Image (cartoon, rainbow, N blue to C red; front, side, top):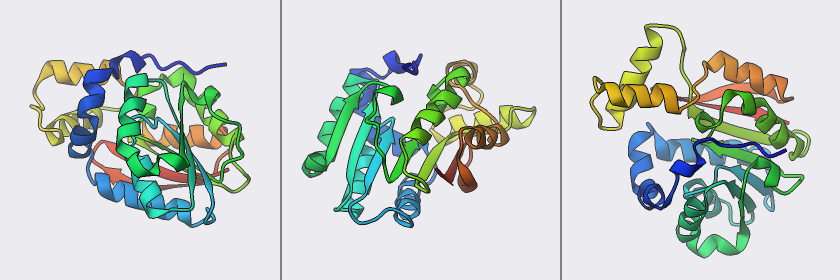
Length: 225
């Protein structure tokens, strides 16, 4: 079964053309997130490891990981053809070690992979498809393989929820009082509380779930198959 992404159509050519420049400005500690992801994977991934990247469109994490680990190979999956085209431009000289797949997690190779990454993607996946997506990733990993997951996640109780939305908008350079922007975040994204994220990872079969990154509205975890 394919896991649909209801927002995939929003990631067209216009979004793809601005992704590489715009995203690092909107995510607190963006470069640090990539560096930590690399470090956490390398704790268990051998020199010729195979890495699965879900939400690989744009190619920024692929480029970062490929630069730091010249022996690793990668399979990247994304439902947006335009974002995958942008990824091809971004990965440049590393293309020989990277295979890009147009589709969803069910379209990814079976593996087994030595590690997996999903950055800045899960808040675009509807709640009813989250657990299935996590289980697909888990099934493709070798025993003990690390999985790094990071995206928007904050408390869904008030006033914490409204405060987090306002801070998210402000960090990206917007007006936190802009009601249209606040409504867009609340309705276009699927944002879960951190404790629900961790419970879902556990239900999918991951162990040793650890929060390693927190930047305003974003959270990141490392866990193991």
